[in-house]
Image 1: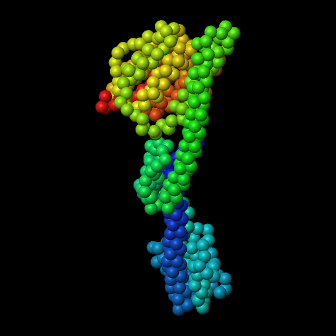
Image 2: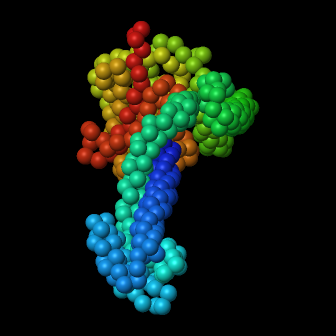
Image 3: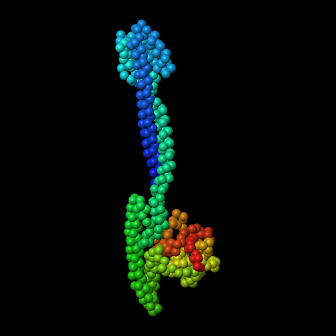
Length: 425
């Protein structure tokens, strides 16, 4: 079902209401006008019949026919037909004029009578209630009134819903922050009540988000300390040669490293995107070079760094480093060749990581930035948090991350992360 705005709904409601009211008023006015016309017609007919009966009462009996004929000739000017019904039942004049005792409508005519001493004079005049005219008048009035009402309602309803539109714009641009500013009340009861309800809902949601973030951060911190200690102990044991224990220690160290990586990622993901206290001016070129320098030799041999352009952004250096680290780690799991490039697109820094792996189909690309998401059929090791972390850090730094088809290899994926360049860089 197609959605329509409140202003449009109000306009159509005004159109329907005004049209109905106008049609009703037009019909009532037409009926009232017809009643007035009918009353005037009755007076004319009664006057004509009264004049005839007065003449008849004063004239001799032998002159009745001539008298009626004379009166009819005078009445022809106004279209009135006359007849005289004598007390003996003899009809003089127009025999098509029916005998009535009071004004009435018959066969498209209005007929009135006046009784005298020598008979009853009856006068008739064509008259029909203009039903078609009534309908036309009502339709015309309804259309005109509806159109005027629609135009007025369109203007007025837009003004009436303006507080709602302002509230919507404020909500649309709000981040999830503790201090939610929805603006001052507008003095419109319904809008102010809605604003209060939204404030309450946002406050509850923010509280839930903060509690979840605190829980994740606390859990990660609690894991970090024993894992660091355990790793140090295992590294000490690995320095002491023991053929029987070497394999077990190596496996344990690998598992501890995996858990420590997971913990670090959870800590980054638990960081609120509104927290900018740790931001400083960071060189993305330095970040990329540092990450490449720390890669194991076998992995470094598979990575090609392209270009030497630099870009400065305001951000958290450790978090930005995790973007490069996780982006490379994700690509190296599935590809034999990886290209890293840092460039600028106007006021935007673009970090691109291309690989020659199997790539990601278009329908799965957006979902890959969700925590624990995996490509169907992908058996590569990992927790499914790398790209989620990249997207989180990008949003945290007012940027964006997206997956595309590789631009440097016939197949493969391209991770593109964009950050706004600092004006002080």
